[in-house]
Length: 324
Length: 249
Image (cartoon, helix red, strand yellow):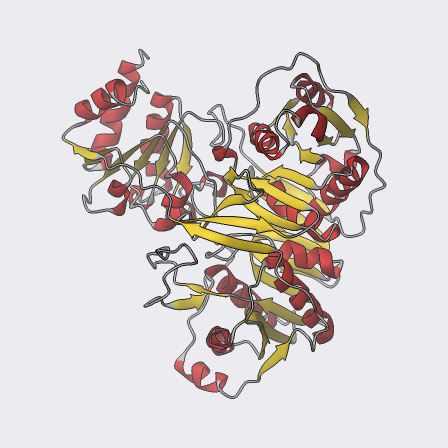
Protein backbone atom coordinates (compact mmCIF):
# COMPACT_ATOMS: atom_id res chain seq x y z
CA UNK A 1 0.00 0.00 0.00
CA UNK A 2 1.03 3.64 -0.43
CA UNK A 3 0.24 6.36 2.08
CA UNK A 4 0.48 10.11 1.60
CA UNK A 5 0.88 12.20 4.74
CA UNK A 6 0.22 15.94 4.60
CA UNK A 7 2.63 17.79 6.87
CA UNK A 8 2.05 21.36 8.00
CA UNK A 9 5.08 23.44 8.94
CA UNK A 10 5.73 26.60 10.91
CA UNK A 11 8.95 28.56 11.41
CA UNK A 12 10.94 26.05 9.40
CA UNK A 13 9.82 22.94 11.26
CA UNK A 14 7.07 20.36 10.89
CA UNK A 15 4.24 21.07 13.34
CA UNK A 16 3.88 18.56 16.17
CA UNK A 17 0.35 17.62 15.08
CA UNK A 18 1.63 16.52 11.66
CA UNK A 19 4.33 14.38 13.29
CA UNK A 20 1.50 12.72 15.25
CA UNK A 21 -0.31 12.13 11.94
CA UNK A 22 2.89 10.55 10.60
CA UNK A 23 2.90 8.24 13.63
CA UNK A 24 -0.64 7.16 12.78
CA UNK A 25 0.42 6.58 9.16
CA UNK A 26 3.21 4.31 10.40
CA UNK A 27 0.61 2.24 12.26
CA UNK A 28 -1.48 2.02 9.08
CA UNK A 29 1.49 0.91 6.97
CA UNK A 30 2.46 -2.72 6.52
CA UNK A 31 4.71 -3.62 9.45
CA UNK A 32 8.40 -2.87 8.71
CA UNK A 33 7.44 -1.27 5.39
CA UNK A 34 6.62 2.25 6.53
CA UNK A 35 9.67 3.88 4.92
CA UNK A 36 8.82 2.32 1.58
CA UNK A 37 5.10 3.00 1.75
CA UNK A 38 4.88 6.51 3.17
CA UNK A 39 5.45 9.78 1.30
CA UNK A 40 5.08 13.15 3.00
CA UNK A 41 3.86 16.31 1.30
CA UNK A 42 4.93 19.78 2.42
CA UNK A 43 3.52 22.84 0.70
CA UNK A 44 4.30 26.48 0.28
CA UNK A 45 7.46 28.53 0.42
CA UNK A 46 9.96 28.14 3.26
CA UNK A 47 9.25 24.44 3.44
CA UNK A 48 12.79 23.20 2.73
CA UNK A 49 13.94 23.03 6.34
CA UNK A 50 10.82 21.11 7.36
CA UNK A 51 11.29 18.82 4.36
CA UNK A 52 14.86 18.01 5.48
CA UNK A 53 13.67 17.26 9.01
CA UNK A 54 11.10 14.79 7.74
CA UNK A 55 13.59 13.22 5.32
CA UNK A 56 15.91 12.73 8.30
CA UNK A 57 13.14 10.72 9.97
CA UNK A 58 13.47 8.33 7.04
CA UNK A 59 10.54 9.27 4.81
CA UNK A 60 10.45 10.48 1.23
CA UNK A 61 9.23 14.02 0.91
CA UNK A 62 7.42 15.80 -1.88
CA UNK A 63 7.74 19.57 -1.85
CA UNK A 64 5.16 21.70 -3.63
CA UNK A 65 6.70 25.11 -3.13
CA UNK A 66 3.95 27.17 -4.78
CA UNK A 67 3.50 30.47 -2.88
CA UNK A 68 -0.26 30.25 -3.39
CA UNK A 69 -0.20 27.45 -0.81
CA UNK A 70 1.32 29.66 1.89
CA UNK A 71 -2.07 30.63 3.22
CA UNK A 72 -4.58 28.18 4.60
CA UNK A 73 -6.93 28.01 1.63
CA UNK A 74 -8.49 24.53 1.55
CA UNK A 75 -9.45 24.63 -2.14
CA UNK A 76 -5.80 24.92 -3.15
CA UNK A 77 -4.30 22.66 -0.48
CA UNK A 78 -6.77 19.93 -1.47
CA UNK A 79 -5.64 20.20 -5.09
CA UNK A 80 -1.99 19.85 -4.05
CA UNK A 81 -2.79 16.85 -1.84
CA UNK A 82 -4.79 15.11 -4.56
CA UNK A 83 -2.01 15.73 -7.09
CA UNK A 84 0.53 14.28 -4.65
CA UNK A 85 -1.74 11.33 -3.91
CA UNK A 86 -1.95 10.59 -7.61
CA UNK A 87 1.78 10.98 -8.08
CA UNK A 88 2.43 8.36 -5.37
CA UNK A 89 -0.58 6.20 -6.25
CA UNK A 90 -1.50 6.45 -2.57
CA UNK A 91 -4.68 4.79 -1.37
CA UNK A 92 -4.41 6.49 2.04
CA UNK A 93 -4.19 10.21 2.73
CA UNK A 94 -3.38 11.07 6.34
CA UNK A 95 -3.62 14.55 7.84
CA UNK A 96 -3.65 15.92 11.38
CA UNK A 97 -7.09 17.06 12.45
CA UNK A 98 -6.03 20.70 12.79
CA UNK A 99 -8.28 23.41 11.34
CA UNK A 100 -6.39 23.01 8.03
CA UNK A 101 -6.92 19.24 8.13
CA UNK A 102 -10.61 19.64 8.96
CA UNK A 103 -11.06 22.13 6.13
CA UNK A 104 -9.21 20.08 3.56
CA UNK A 105 -9.59 16.33 4.21
CA UNK A 106 -13.20 16.05 3.05
CA UNK A 107 -12.54 18.07 -0.12
CA UNK A 108 -9.81 15.56 -0.97
CA UNK A 109 -12.23 12.71 -0.19
CA UNK A 110 -14.79 14.11 -2.62
CA UNK A 111 -12.13 14.71 -5.28
CA UNK A 112 -11.07 11.07 -5.31
CA UNK A 113 -14.45 9.60 -4.37
CA UNK A 114 -12.94 8.30 -1.19
CA UNK A 115 -14.30 8.19 2.34
CA UNK A 116 -12.98 9.87 5.47
CA UNK A 117 -12.62 8.80 9.06
CA UNK A 118 -12.33 12.01 11.09
CA UNK A 119 -10.19 12.60 14.15
CA UNK A 120 -9.09 8.98 14.68
CA UNK A 121 -7.68 7.92 18.02
CA UNK A 122 -6.59 4.42 17.06
CA UNK A 123 -5.62 2.20 14.15
CA UNK A 124 -6.88 -1.39 14.35
CA UNK A 125 -4.98 -4.30 12.81
CA UNK A 126 -8.07 -5.38 10.86
CA UNK A 127 -8.03 -2.14 8.86
CA UNK A 128 -10.73 -0.39 10.89
CA UNK A 129 -10.24 2.79 12.89
CA UNK A 130 -11.28 4.05 16.31
CA UNK A 131 -12.82 7.47 16.50
CA UNK A 132 -14.65 9.42 19.18
CA UNK A 133 -18.35 10.29 18.85
CA UNK A 134 -20.91 12.02 21.06
CA UNK A 135 -18.37 14.44 22.55
CA UNK A 136 -15.98 11.58 23.29
CA UNK A 137 -18.55 9.59 25.28
CA UNK A 138 -18.54 6.86 22.67
CA UNK A 139 -15.64 5.20 20.89
CA UNK A 140 -16.71 3.91 17.50
CA UNK A 141 -14.96 1.34 15.35
CA UNK A 142 -15.40 2.46 11.76
CA UNK A 143 -14.69 0.77 8.45
CA UNK A 144 -14.18 2.72 5.24
CA UNK A 145 -15.65 1.02 2.17
CA UNK A 146 -13.78 2.95 -0.46
CA UNK A 147 -10.70 2.44 -2.59
CA UNK A 148 -9.14 5.60 -1.21
CA UNK A 149 -9.26 6.39 2.48
CA UNK A 150 -8.79 9.80 4.01
CA UNK A 151 -7.79 9.76 7.66
CA UNK A 152 -7.63 12.82 9.88
CA UNK A 153 -5.76 12.15 13.10
CA UNK A 154 -6.39 13.44 16.63
CA UNK A 155 -2.83 14.51 17.53
CA UNK A 156 -3.18 13.81 21.26
CA UNK A 157 -3.76 10.12 20.52
CA UNK A 158 -0.39 9.50 18.87
CA UNK A 159 3.17 10.25 19.94
CA UNK A 160 4.96 12.50 17.43
CA UNK A 161 7.65 10.77 15.38
CA UNK A 162 11.07 11.90 16.59
CA UNK A 163 13.63 9.20 15.89
CA UNK A 164 16.08 9.94 13.12
CA UNK A 165 16.57 7.13 10.63
CA UNK A 166 19.86 5.61 9.54
CA UNK A 167 19.00 6.41 5.94
CA UNK A 168 17.36 9.77 5.18
CA UNK A 169 14.47 9.76 2.71
CA UNK A 170 14.64 11.54 -0.65
CA UNK A 171 13.28 15.01 -1.25
CA UNK A 172 11.75 15.86 -4.61
CA UNK A 173 9.80 18.74 -6.06
CA UNK A 174 6.17 18.34 -7.06
CA UNK A 175 4.70 20.82 -9.52
CA UNK A 176 0.96 21.26 -9.40
CA UNK A 177 -1.14 23.47 -11.66
CA UNK A 178 -3.46 25.10 -9.18
CA UNK A 179 -6.91 26.33 -10.17
CA UNK A 180 -7.59 29.30 -7.94
CA UNK A 181 -11.08 30.19 -9.22
CA UNK A 182 -12.74 29.09 -5.98
CA UNK A 183 -9.84 29.70 -3.62
CA UNK A 184 -10.77 33.16 -2.36
CA UNK A 185 -8.41 35.62 -0.68
CA UNK A 186 -7.31 36.01 2.91
CA UNK A 187 -8.27 39.50 4.04
CA UNK A 188 -6.78 39.29 7.55
CA UNK A 189 -5.53 36.90 10.19
CA UNK A 190 -6.07 38.02 13.73
CA UNK A 191 -3.60 36.06 15.82
CA UNK A 192 -1.69 36.86 19.00
CA UNK A 193 1.97 35.97 19.32
CA UNK A 194 2.81 34.75 22.79
CA UNK A 195 5.83 33.76 24.82
CA UNK A 196 3.78 31.03 26.42
CA UNK A 197 3.71 27.47 25.04
CA UNK A 198 0.86 26.65 22.66
CA UNK A 199 -2.07 24.50 23.75
CA UNK A 200 -0.90 21.81 21.35
CA UNK A 201 2.62 21.61 22.78
CA UNK A 202 2.22 22.45 26.46
CA UNK A 203 2.98 20.01 29.28
CA UNK A 204 0.75 22.04 31.58
CA UNK A 205 -2.42 23.96 30.75
CA UNK A 206 -4.26 26.34 33.04
CA UNK A 207 -7.81 26.99 31.87
CA UNK A 208 -10.31 29.57 33.05
CA UNK A 209 -14.08 29.43 33.01
CA UNK A 210 -17.14 31.59 33.39
CA UNK A 211 -16.67 32.05 37.15
CA UNK A 212 -13.84 34.49 36.46
CA UNK A 213 -16.58 36.93 35.54
CA UNK A 214 -14.52 39.41 33.52
CA UNK A 215 -11.72 39.76 31.03
CA UNK A 216 -9.77 41.71 33.67
CA UNK A 217 -10.15 38.91 36.21
CA UNK A 218 -9.17 36.29 33.67
CA UNK A 219 -5.90 38.13 33.14
CA UNK A 220 -5.39 38.87 36.83
CA UNK A 221 -6.04 35.30 38.01
CA UNK A 222 -5.34 32.87 35.17
CA UNK A 223 -2.29 34.50 33.64
CA UNK A 224 -0.10 34.48 36.78
CA UNK A 225 -1.11 30.92 37.60
CA UNK A 226 -0.22 29.82 34.07
CA UNK A 227 3.08 31.65 34.25
CA UNK A 228 3.90 30.06 37.62
CA UNK A 229 3.55 26.65 35.95
CA UNK A 230 5.11 27.74 32.66
CA UNK A 231 1.79 26.67 31.20
CA UNK A 232 -0.34 27.41 28.16
CA UNK A 233 -3.69 29.08 28.72
CA UNK A 234 -7.04 27.53 27.84
CA UNK A 235 -10.64 28.56 28.34
CA UNK A 236 -14.14 27.12 28.49
CA UNK A 237 -16.67 28.00 25.82
CA UNK A 238 -18.54 30.22 28.28
CA UNK A 239 -15.40 32.23 28.98
CA UNK A 240 -14.76 32.75 25.25
CA UNK A 241 -18.41 33.60 24.54
CA UNK A 242 -18.24 36.24 27.27
CA UNK A 243 -15.09 37.73 25.79
CA UNK A 244 -12.72 36.75 28.61
CA UNK A 245 -10.46 34.82 26.23
CA UNK A 246 -9.91 34.59 22.46
CA UNK A 247 -11.49 31.78 20.42
CA UNK A 248 -8.27 29.87 19.89
CA UNK A 249 -7.96 29.26 23.63
CA UNK A 250 -11.20 27.30 23.74
CA UNK A 251 -10.82 23.70 24.89
CA UNK A 252 -13.67 21.35 24.16
CA UNK A 253 -15.65 19.14 21.79
CA UNK A 254 -15.66 21.74 19.07
CA UNK A 255 -12.58 23.68 20.14
CA UNK A 256 -9.14 22.26 20.87
CA UNK A 257 -8.64 18.76 22.21
CA UNK A 258 -5.69 18.63 24.60
CA UNK A 259 -4.03 15.95 26.71
CA UNK A 260 -1.23 17.57 28.70
CA UNK A 261 0.56 16.09 31.69
CA UNK A 262 -1.41 18.48 33.91
CA UNK A 263 -4.68 20.37 33.28
CA UNK A 264 -5.75 22.92 35.88
CA UNK A 265 -9.41 23.95 35.53
CA UNK A 266 -10.12 27.22 37.32
CA UNK A 267 -13.76 28.19 37.75
CA UNK A 268 -14.90 25.66 35.15
CA UNK A 269 -17.98 23.61 35.98
CA UNK A 270 -17.19 20.71 33.65
CA UNK A 271 -19.90 20.57 30.99
CA UNK A 272 -19.83 17.44 28.81
CA UNK A 273 -18.58 19.51 25.89
CA UNK A 274 -15.62 20.87 27.88
CA UNK A 275 -14.67 17.46 29.26
CA UNK A 276 -14.56 16.17 25.69
CA UNK A 277 -11.58 18.42 25.09
CA UNK A 278 -9.48 17.62 28.18
CA UNK A 279 -10.43 14.37 29.88
CA UNK A 280 -7.44 12.55 28.41
CA UNK A 281 -5.06 14.79 30.37
CA UNK A 282 -2.73 12.77 32.58
CA UNK A 283 -3.59 14.69 35.73
CA UNK A 284 -6.50 17.05 36.26
CA UNK A 285 -6.88 19.65 39.01
CA UNK A 286 -10.17 21.46 39.58
CA UNK A 287 -10.64 24.66 41.55
CA UNK A 288 -14.27 25.63 41.94
CA UNK A 289 -16.44 26.89 44.76
CA UNK A 290 -19.21 24.40 43.92
CA UNK A 291 -18.16 21.03 45.29
CA UNK A 292 -20.85 19.29 43.23
CA UNK A 293 -19.65 20.60 39.88
CA UNK A 294 -19.22 17.79 37.32
CA UNK A 295 -15.56 18.75 36.83
CA UNK A 296 -14.77 16.92 40.07
CA UNK A 297 -15.83 13.66 38.40
CA UNK A 298 -12.72 13.80 36.23
CA UNK A 299 -10.38 15.67 38.59
CA UNK A 300 -7.59 13.76 40.27
CA UNK A 301 -7.16 16.56 42.78
CA UNK A 302 -10.06 18.83 43.63
CA UNK A 303 -10.00 22.01 45.64
CA UNK A 304 -13.36 23.39 46.67
CA UNK A 305 -12.48 27.00 47.26
CA UNK A 306 -12.97 30.58 46.15
CA UNK A 307 -10.75 30.77 43.08
CA UNK A 308 -10.06 34.46 43.71
CA UNK A 309 -8.21 33.37 46.87
CA UNK A 310 -7.00 29.89 45.97
CA UNK A 311 -5.60 30.59 42.51
CA UNK A 312 -3.21 33.38 43.55
CA UNK A 313 -2.17 31.27 46.58
CA UNK A 314 -1.49 28.33 44.27
CA UNK A 315 0.43 30.54 41.86
CA UNK A 316 2.73 31.67 44.67
CA UNK A 317 3.22 28.14 46.00
CA UNK A 318 3.94 26.71 42.56
CA UNK A 319 6.40 29.46 41.69
CA UNK A 320 8.21 28.76 44.99
CA UNK A 321 8.19 24.99 44.42
CA UNK A 322 9.67 25.49 40.95
CA UNK A 323 12.31 27.77 42.43
CA UNK A 324 11.15 30.88 40.61
CA UNK B 1 -31.13 34.47 -3.93
CA UNK B 2 -32.34 31.29 -2.30
CA UNK B 3 -30.49 30.03 0.76
CA UNK B 4 -30.58 26.34 1.58
CA UNK B 5 -29.85 25.30 5.15
CA UNK B 6 -29.14 21.62 5.75
CA UNK B 7 -29.89 20.39 9.28
CA UNK B 8 -29.60 17.23 11.31
CA UNK B 9 -31.66 15.59 14.02
CA UNK B 10 -29.42 14.69 16.98
CA UNK B 11 -29.75 13.72 20.66
CA UNK B 12 -29.96 16.67 23.05
CA UNK B 13 -26.48 17.96 23.92
CA UNK B 14 -27.21 17.52 27.63
CA UNK B 15 -28.26 13.88 27.27
CA UNK B 16 -26.09 11.33 29.04
CA UNK B 17 -25.19 9.04 26.19
CA UNK B 18 -24.93 5.30 26.97
CA UNK B 19 -23.72 2.60 24.64
CA UNK B 20 -25.97 -0.46 24.28
CA UNK B 21 -24.62 -3.59 25.95
CA UNK B 22 -24.12 -5.29 22.57
CA UNK B 23 -22.20 -2.32 21.16
CA UNK B 24 -24.59 -1.92 18.24
CA UNK B 25 -25.41 1.69 18.99
CA UNK B 26 -26.50 4.08 21.72
CA UNK B 27 -29.48 3.70 24.06
CA UNK B 28 -32.21 5.91 22.59
CA UNK B 29 -35.00 5.34 25.13
CA UNK B 30 -35.95 8.57 26.77
CA UNK B 31 -33.63 10.67 24.63
CA UNK B 32 -34.83 14.11 23.65
CA UNK B 33 -34.12 14.86 19.98
CA UNK B 34 -33.21 18.34 18.82
CA UNK B 35 -31.98 20.27 15.82
CA UNK B 36 -28.16 20.02 16.00
CA UNK B 37 -27.06 23.24 17.78
CA UNK B 38 -24.74 24.25 14.94
CA UNK B 39 -27.56 23.71 12.44
CA UNK B 40 -29.84 25.96 14.50
CA UNK B 41 -27.19 28.67 14.21
CA UNK B 42 -27.20 28.06 10.44
CA UNK B 43 -30.99 28.53 10.24
CA UNK B 44 -30.71 31.73 12.27
CA UNK B 45 -27.99 33.15 10.02
CA UNK B 46 -30.04 32.40 6.92
CA UNK B 47 -33.10 34.10 8.42
CA UNK B 48 -31.08 37.20 9.32
CA UNK B 49 -29.73 37.37 5.77
CA UNK B 50 -33.28 37.18 4.43
CA UNK B 51 -34.41 39.85 6.86
CA UNK B 52 -31.53 42.04 5.69
CA UNK B 53 -32.73 41.68 2.13
CA UNK B 54 -29.82 39.51 0.97
CA UNK B 55 -32.02 36.50 0.19
CA UNK B 56 -35.54 35.93 -1.04
CA UNK B 57 -36.19 32.54 0.45
CA UNK B 58 -34.82 30.22 3.09
CA UNK B 59 -35.36 26.52 2.51
CA UNK B 60 -34.29 23.88 4.96
CA UNK B 61 -33.46 20.26 4.22
CA UNK B 62 -32.40 17.13 6.00
CA UNK B 63 -31.47 13.60 4.99
CA UNK B 64 -32.89 10.90 7.22
CA UNK B 65 -35.88 9.00 8.47
CA UNK B 66 -39.43 10.29 8.86
CA UNK B 67 -38.73 11.34 12.49
CA UNK B 68 -36.55 14.16 11.22
CA UNK B 69 -39.70 15.96 10.02
CA UNK B 70 -40.06 17.21 13.61
CA UNK B 71 -36.78 19.07 13.32
CA UNK B 72 -37.78 20.47 9.92
CA UNK B 73 -41.02 21.77 11.50
CA UNK B 74 -38.94 23.47 14.16
CA UNK B 75 -36.90 25.19 11.45
CA UNK B 76 -40.10 26.28 9.72
CA UNK B 77 -41.33 27.61 13.06
CA UNK B 78 -38.14 29.63 13.42
CA UNK B 79 -39.02 31.21 10.09
CA UNK B 80 -37.81 29.09 7.19
CA UNK B 81 -40.12 29.16 4.17
CA UNK B 82 -40.16 25.55 3.03
CA UNK B 83 -38.66 22.23 4.05
CA UNK B 84 -37.46 19.09 2.30
CA UNK B 85 -37.08 15.69 3.90
CA UNK B 86 -34.78 13.55 1.78
CA UNK B 87 -36.06 10.29 3.14
CA UNK B 88 -33.50 7.56 3.69
CA UNK B 89 -33.89 4.83 6.27
CA UNK B 90 -30.72 2.87 5.52
CA UNK B 91 -27.40 3.83 7.17
CA UNK B 92 -26.17 7.28 6.24
CA UNK B 93 -22.80 8.94 6.30
CA UNK B 94 -21.53 12.43 5.48
CA UNK B 95 -20.62 11.25 1.99
CA UNK B 96 -24.10 10.02 1.03
CA UNK B 97 -25.77 12.98 2.73
CA UNK B 98 -23.60 15.38 0.78
CA UNK B 99 -24.51 13.67 -2.52
CA UNK B 100 -28.22 13.89 -1.74
CA UNK B 101 -27.98 17.51 -0.62
CA UNK B 102 -25.93 18.48 -3.68
CA UNK B 103 -28.63 17.09 -5.95
CA UNK B 104 -31.38 18.95 -4.09
CA UNK B 105 -29.37 22.20 -4.04
CA UNK B 106 -28.91 22.04 -7.80
CA UNK B 107 -32.57 21.25 -8.35
CA UNK B 108 -33.72 24.09 -6.11
CA UNK B 109 -31.16 26.48 -7.55
CA UNK B 110 -29.91 27.73 -4.20
CA UNK B 111 -27.23 30.43 -4.37
CA UNK B 112 -25.87 29.97 -0.85
CA UNK B 113 -25.76 26.97 1.45
CA UNK B 114 -25.27 27.18 5.21
CA UNK B 115 -24.78 24.17 7.49
CA UNK B 116 -23.54 23.50 10.99
CA UNK B 117 -19.81 22.74 11.06
CA UNK B 118 -20.36 19.37 12.74
CA UNK B 119 -23.14 17.37 14.25
CA UNK B 120 -22.72 16.72 17.96
CA UNK B 121 -23.54 13.02 17.58
CA UNK B 122 -20.99 11.73 15.08
CA UNK B 123 -18.68 14.79 15.24
CA UNK B 124 -17.41 14.13 11.71
CA UNK B 125 -17.11 17.75 10.48
CA UNK B 126 -17.21 16.67 6.80
CA UNK B 127 -20.57 17.35 5.15
CA UNK B 128 -20.09 21.07 4.35
CA UNK B 129 -16.66 20.49 2.81
CA UNK B 130 -17.78 17.40 0.85
CA UNK B 131 -20.78 19.35 -0.37
CA UNK B 132 -18.71 22.32 -1.50
CA UNK B 133 -16.34 20.08 -3.48
CA UNK B 134 -19.23 18.12 -5.05
CA UNK B 135 -21.04 21.31 -6.06
CA UNK B 136 -17.81 22.83 -7.39
CA UNK B 137 -18.26 25.76 -5.00
CA UNK B 138 -16.05 27.76 -2.67
CA UNK B 139 -16.25 27.10 1.06
CA UNK B 140 -15.85 29.10 4.27
CA UNK B 141 -16.01 26.83 7.29
CA UNK B 142 -16.20 27.49 11.05
CA UNK B 143 -17.78 30.93 10.51
CA UNK B 144 -18.10 33.41 13.37
CA UNK B 145 -19.14 36.30 11.13
CA UNK B 146 -20.75 36.37 7.69
CA UNK B 147 -21.22 39.24 5.26
CA UNK B 148 -22.84 38.64 1.88
CA UNK B 149 -22.35 40.99 -1.06
CA UNK B 150 -23.35 40.68 -4.74
CA UNK B 151 -20.68 38.28 -5.89
CA UNK B 152 -18.72 37.41 -2.74
CA UNK B 153 -19.05 36.34 0.85
CA UNK B 154 -16.67 37.74 3.47
CA UNK B 155 -16.44 35.29 6.33
CA UNK B 156 -14.49 35.42 9.57
CA UNK B 157 -13.50 31.89 10.60
CA UNK B 158 -12.41 30.49 13.92
CA UNK B 159 -9.21 28.58 13.20
CA UNK B 160 -6.42 27.12 15.33
CA UNK B 161 -4.35 30.30 15.50
CA UNK B 162 -7.15 32.82 15.90
CA UNK B 163 -9.56 34.52 13.51
CA UNK B 164 -9.07 34.40 9.75
CA UNK B 165 -11.19 36.55 7.46
CA UNK B 166 -11.58 35.27 3.92
CA UNK B 167 -13.40 36.58 0.86
CA UNK B 168 -14.78 33.79 -1.32
CA UNK B 169 -16.86 33.90 -4.50
CA UNK B 170 -20.55 33.10 -4.46
CA UNK B 171 -22.08 30.59 -4.68
CA UNK B 172 -20.43 29.07 -1.63
CA UNK B 173 -20.96 26.73 1.29
CA UNK B 174 -20.60 28.19 4.77
CA UNK B 175 -20.39 26.11 7.94
CA UNK B 176 -21.27 27.72 11.25
CA UNK B 177 -19.30 27.89 14.45
CA UNK B 178 -20.67 28.56 17.94
CA UNK B 179 -20.31 32.31 18.09
CA UNK B 180 -21.86 33.23 14.74
CA UNK B 181 -25.18 34.13 16.34
CA UNK B 182 -27.68 33.26 19.05
CA UNK B 183 -30.65 31.48 17.48
CA UNK B 184 -34.14 32.83 18.09
CA UNK B 185 -36.82 30.78 19.83
CA UNK B 186 -39.82 29.87 17.71
CA UNK B 187 -42.72 32.01 18.91
CA UNK B 188 -46.17 30.46 19.32
CA UNK B 189 -47.67 32.33 16.34
CA UNK B 190 -44.76 31.10 14.23
CA UNK B 191 -45.18 27.52 15.42
CA UNK B 192 -48.82 27.73 14.27
CA UNK B 193 -47.87 29.32 10.93
CA UNK B 194 -45.29 26.58 10.38
CA UNK B 195 -47.99 23.94 10.10
CA UNK B 196 -49.12 25.51 6.83
CA UNK B 197 -45.66 25.80 5.30
CA UNK B 198 -44.68 23.15 2.75
CA UNK B 199 -42.73 20.10 3.97
CA UNK B 200 -41.96 17.94 0.97
CA UNK B 201 -40.64 14.39 1.07
CA UNK B 202 -38.14 13.43 -1.61
CA UNK B 203 -36.38 10.14 -2.29
CA UNK B 204 -32.80 9.60 -3.37
CA UNK B 205 -34.14 8.01 -6.55
CA UNK B 206 -36.07 11.18 -7.41
CA UNK B 207 -32.82 13.10 -7.03
CA UNK B 208 -30.98 10.52 -9.18
CA UNK B 209 -28.68 9.72 -6.30
CA UNK B 210 -27.49 6.17 -5.90
CA UNK B 211 -25.06 4.58 -3.54
CA UNK B 212 -24.63 3.63 0.06
CA UNK B 213 -22.84 4.94 3.08
CA UNK B 214 -19.09 4.27 2.83
CA UNK B 215 -18.27 4.91 6.48
CA UNK B 216 -19.67 1.95 8.38
CA UNK B 217 -19.89 1.96 12.17
CA UNK B 218 -19.01 -1.61 13.14
CA UNK B 219 -19.23 -1.24 16.86
CA UNK B 220 -19.51 1.28 19.65
CA UNK B 221 -17.98 1.11 23.10
CA UNK B 222 -17.70 3.33 26.13
CA UNK B 223 -14.29 4.80 26.84
CA UNK B 224 -12.56 3.60 30.01
CA UNK B 225 -13.63 5.78 32.90
CA UNK B 226 -10.92 7.80 34.57
CA UNK B 227 -10.13 6.42 38.00
CA UNK B 228 -11.68 8.66 40.62
CA UNK B 229 -9.79 11.46 42.30
CA UNK B 230 -10.20 13.15 45.64
CA UNK B 231 -10.81 16.54 47.16
CA UNK B 232 -7.95 18.19 49.03
CA UNK B 233 -8.16 20.52 52.01
CA UNK B 234 -5.72 23.22 51.03
CA UNK B 235 -3.44 24.70 48.41
CA UNK B 236 -0.49 23.29 50.36
CA UNK B 237 -1.96 19.78 50.15
CA UNK B 238 -2.49 20.27 46.42
CA UNK B 239 1.11 21.33 45.85
CA UNK B 240 2.33 18.28 47.77
CA UNK B 241 0.12 16.02 45.66
CA UNK B 242 1.39 17.63 42.47
CA UNK B 243 4.97 17.12 43.60
CA UNK B 244 4.74 13.62 45.00
CA UNK B 245 1.94 11.92 43.09
CA UNK B 246 1.68 13.73 39.78
CA UNK B 247 5.38 14.57 39.78
CA UNK B 248 4.75 17.64 37.68
CA UNK B 249 6.52 20.18 39.88
